[in-house]
Length: 191
Image (cartoon, rainbow, N blue to C red; front, side):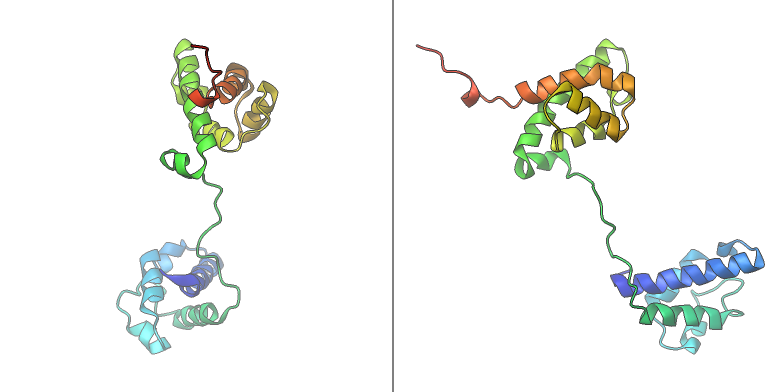
């Protein structure tokens, strides 16, 4: 499906099917399968007769409730309450893009990841059991104050358990501070 208008038509068909299914206490998919609703949206029939003639629009109630489905299509076509085409997301960019999009975060992640892996190895557990990789990425992308307490609070807010925070917060904070140091930041030695 493309566009908010098609999504609105799909929503109205879905809602009408759900309401009718509840009314007669039948599984919605038994009335009109999902693929039939999709076919009706994509075909964009211009009349009730065109909807009825659509062979892909089938199911137990596809013809007996034709007025219901046509009314739903009409509501979807005329509604001002259009759904968003894209759901807002707080997803981070993939780590391979970090060097270009947020170089400081890239350096923090590259410094902290091996530290967390080493802790997991010491504890004889998979790294993802010690700390969910997404938690580390989120803290690296938008770090709190670079202290163990602040990192620990951020991890806990994301959902890390107290034992995970206890094992990782200090070392992640240290890695965030020490890791991004580049050769140009190092003090020059006298020759």
